[in-house]
Length: 437
Image (cartoon, rainbow, N blue to C red; front, top):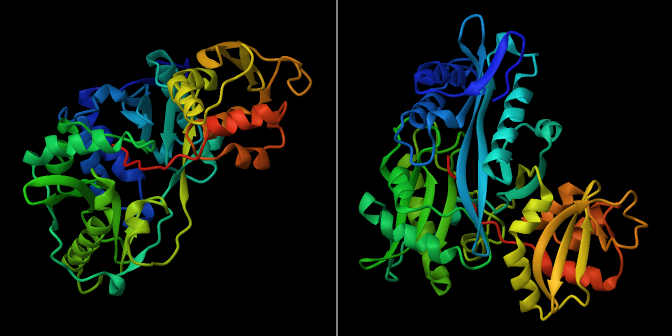
C-alpha cells in the first residue's frame, strides 16, 4: 500500500475500523437527502460489508486513509470484487463504492491517493477492469471514462400497468431455498452473448436474506415460477423513490420464449408491490426499470416515458492485456462471421503500446504486447490506431467500431479489410448487468 511522509497513511481496512468507517461514510454520503444528518442506510451498508458475513467483501477490501497523529480513518473506499461474463468469458472486475473524505481533511488529494493504491492492488491481483458510478466528470481525472450504459428503459406509469392474469407464470418473493435455482438461471442466461454479473448460490442467499432492513442497497428478490419450477427472477427496490417510482434492477428468464408471458406477470406483480409500498405522502407513480432500452422486460412491456441512459465510469490499466483476455471471444466472433485474417499479424496501436494479434491459418492464436510506433498513422506495420479509452469501449461492447470512428478522429484504420475485420470483432453487446454491492 502507498504511504506518504506526511500526515496521512493509505492502508488496507481492518475489522476494527468498522464503527469509524460506518460513522465516516454515513456523515459524508447523500447529505442533500438527509439535510446534513448521518444517513442510516449508508451506515447499515458499511456495517454489512465490514461484518465478515458478506460473501464477496472482506474488511481489507476497504482502503483507508489514516491520519498518522490520531490513528483515525479520515477517508476510505471499498472495492467490491466480482466476476462478470462476456459471451461466456470470465472478466474479473472491481466495482468501487463508498468513496468519501471527512470534510476537515478535504483538499489534500486523499481520493487520488486512494485510487492510486486501488489501481496498484488491481494490477498486482490481475483485475483488468475497475468501474464506478459517480460524480459527473470527476473520475475522468483518475483515468476513467464512460464505457458502460446504465439504464435507459422507459418508465411505465402506474396507470399503464396490466391487471394480473392467470397464464401459468407467477412471481413470488424468493426464499433462501431458491438460491441454487437462481444460480442455475444465471448460468444459463449468461451464455447468450450479453454482459452479465452472475451470482452463485451463496451470493443469492445473501441478496435474499443476508442484508439488514435499513441497508441502502437491499433489494427485493422475487422468483418467476411455473408451478414448482423456477424459470427466472425479478429484482426491485425495497422502497419507493422520492418521486413515487419503484425501481427494477434486474430481470431474467431462463427460456427466451417465456418473455412475453413473463413480462405480463412481472409488471402485474410490480404494480401490486408499488401500491403496497405507497404511503399518503408518497403515492406510487411509476415503474422505473434501471435496464437497457433493449432489455426484454422493456421491449415486451407497456409503453412508457423514455429516459436518457446514464453510464458507468470504467477503467483498465492495460488495454493490451484486456484484448488478450478477450482472445477466445474474438476468435469465436470471426469464426461466426466466416472471416480469416490473410497474414500472420494484425497490429493495433494504442498510442504508446501496441497489441500484436498473431494468426495461424487465418485464426487468432495469441495476443502479445509490443512497443507502439512513433507515429502509428504513418507506420507501415500498423493496421489500426485506437486510443485506449476507445479500446475499452469496443472491448465491453459499449460502442461499435463505426461509432468509435465517428467519435475519435484519431481512431485510424489502414484499409477496408481491417475495418471489416474489427467491426466483426467488436459488436454492440447487450448490457444485462446487475452488479454486486
